[in-house]
Image 1 (cartoon, rainbow, N blue to C red):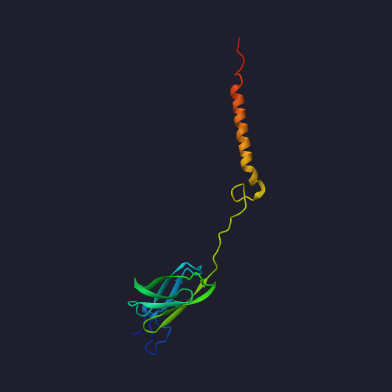
Image 2: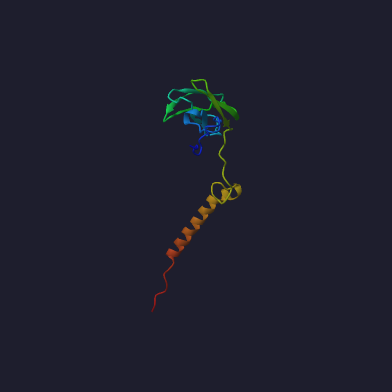
Amino acid sequence: MAPGPGEPSPDWPEQPGDRQPRPGDVVFVEVHPSPVQPGYLVGIRANCRDNSVPATVVSDAFGRVQVHPQRGELTASAMVNERTRPGNYRVKLECRDGVTASTMLQVVRSARPSPGPHTGFGGAAGNGLNGLLVPGGLALTIAGAAVGIVAARRPRGAARG
C-alpha cells in the first residue's frame, strides 16, 4: 500500500522535516510587549516539554522569575527594573529537564508626552494672542452690555396721532 500524503515512504528513513512537531516538542519563550520602558510589566509566555511543572525565566532586564502552568502553557509577569538602561536583553527559559530557549527583550528610554501641535487659539497656541484673548473677550462683553442698555432706554417710537 502506498503511503498517504505527508507520510514517509517505508523505503526511506524518516527525515527531520518529515513529521510535524507536537506542541510538547516545541520549547519557546515570548515576552510582550517589546519594546518596553523601565518600570513597566511584561508578560511572559513559555512552553517546555512538560508544562505541568514550573520553569525559570532569567534576564538582566528583570532578574529571575518562575513561570507557572496555566491553560497548558507556562506564564508569568515581571517588572522591568527601573534602572535598566535602554538596549536589547536576552530572556532565557530554563526548563526542569535542562532544555533551554531564549528570546530578546528591547528596553527603550522613557518617553515624555509631546505638548501637541501649535494650532488654533486654544491652549496649545503660542504666545502670539494668548495675552489678548481674555481682555478682548471682556471688552466685547462690556460693549455688548452697553449697547443693550442704550437700546433698552431708547424711546420706542413717536406717538401716532
